[in-house]
Image 1 (cartoon, rainbow, N blue to C red):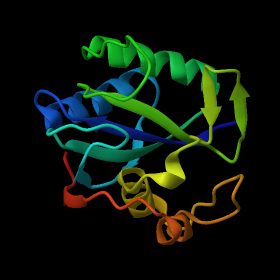
Image 2 (cartoon, rainbow, N blue to C red; image 1 turned 90 degrees about the horizontal axis):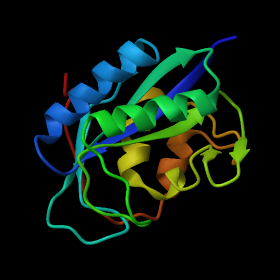
Image 3 (cartoon, rainbow, N blue to C red; image 1 turned 30 degrees about the vertical axis):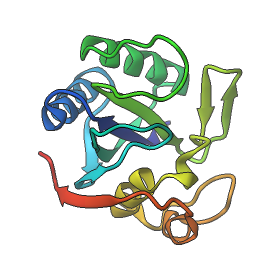
Image 4 (cartoon, rainbow, N blue to C red; image 1 turned 90 degrees about the vertical axis):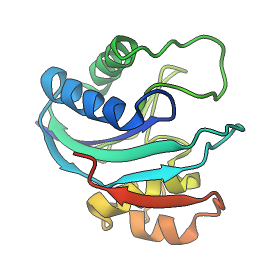
Length: 166
């Protein structure tokens, strides 16, 4: 059985647009064809201070791969694109790929994988592009649509829609 999987892509270092493009290419070659992609959005850093804004995008695929295998592929892609994970916490990065949703599944694998993404409802840089991809999609735990979550979001950081980024 194939599940719809939604990813958030982000970059605030280097050629940000190129990093998003390379991430999309590698996801398509290693995991599955991209069915839908949001516009690219620019936003301020979330959870830490940085003078370098992020470019963000949400993509949707369908796959039968288990969520844990997808996570491991994403980690390989991030590493290939130059991301170094060191100490915990938020900081500037070449690429960040998060699994937002895996069908209507709720997945908890200790500290390794939590789906739905636990902070997605707090982040405009996730909700705006996700609503563009599928505003009527329901969050499996909150029983709200992405559009409703966007209306309820208390994030006050700035965000600007740029383009399709392709």
